[in-house]
Image 1 (cartoon, protein in one colour):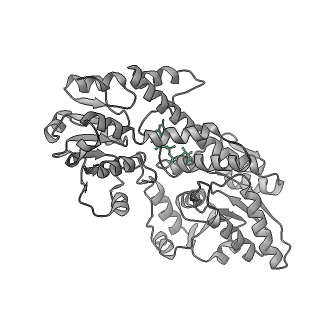
Image 2 (tube, helix red, strand yellow):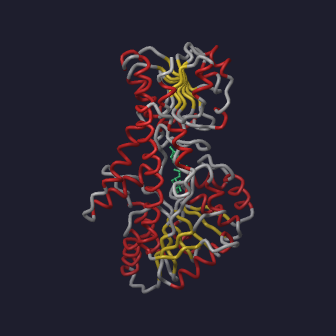
Image 3 (cartoon, helix red, strand yellow):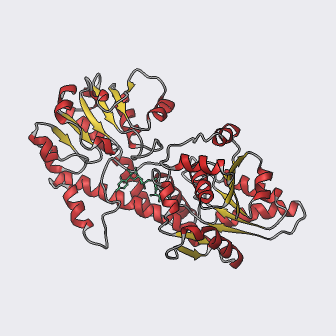
Length: 448
Ligand code: UDX
């Protein structure tokens, strides 16, 4: 099949590369000339395991091409994917200007019937707006061409996106048009071999499914963080509680890990956008509001612990902290809404210095914060510890799991760890004379 994808960001590029990988012919369109040139040379703008080889191989085989020419893109595919960004507006709602612009472009250039598929995360009702934009252009051109708008939200996790696309849990398709459904079935047949993973529903339900999934996961995390804060005050260990409740299959073990808050490009943005959508239709989504509030507070949790340890914000001036993990989660270089940023910015505001290390997000940190006296980016995990007062862990990269604590004690000025991801065993560290602060681990916090 011939597929066009507008937007070579994270979602568009993964979609394009994976569709080409199973044999479809894909043309990716982006307005950014430099990015398109780099993609043609196999240079990928993001770090995503497994993506670079499939982009290179499929580009070399001719099944994956890149262009800045929208007219060429519209002429190419029977299916036109919209996979452009929907960044949050000042008020938290999703900014649809890029989605709308692509829809207008499709309407302005199409000369045969098309199926327009929306993959961008968009508020419920956007499909209808896309339809109106395409129709508006056709009307201006005095053409009567048939087209359908389908919602096909993505459920890709950063760091595992290629695998998630190739082996989906479900493929949500929002359309009531039999021709569109047939085309979408044909498109996804290679990913749907052993059992049918395609769930076909109306457009609006598909749009809401995407938000519902992310809001549910964010709710699980905020719930656990709330319980962690409570456990701390009650002298209980949230990690024991987590295992205790996860064993109930109705609850399950996934996404109940407490920590220094969720970040990334999806959860914070989508929870806010759904909250905003609810308001627009006259419904106050109290729970979503709380999920967001708990998360915002949680991102400062490590700072609260640090201040408590040193006796207030003023005591942090002149101190140096080693910080392991800058990305919002492991296996990505993405720092959008990363808890590490809240921690670093609060430390800087208090006059402290940071010696940071992350296996992938160092360049991104440099790009965001530039050169500053109170930030030293260190080449290795161990180098970040040298001469620092204490260690802070913000992301649970695998390589942080089993450090040499004896060696660490020699590098740090104080044997103190603030662990935002509960990576270490408080008991063991206490036995070795460390002050260990985890999230919701009441028993460890007050140990001498
Ligand atoms: C998420 C969804 O999982 C994915 O389906 C959707 O398409 C896009 O948004 P992503 O943002 O890549 O994916 O990250 P995810 O792995 O879901 O983690 C989000 C955040 O939650 C991270 O900051 C992570 O550290 C945090 N998290 C996750 C927790 O704090 N506790 C958990 O138990 C799980």
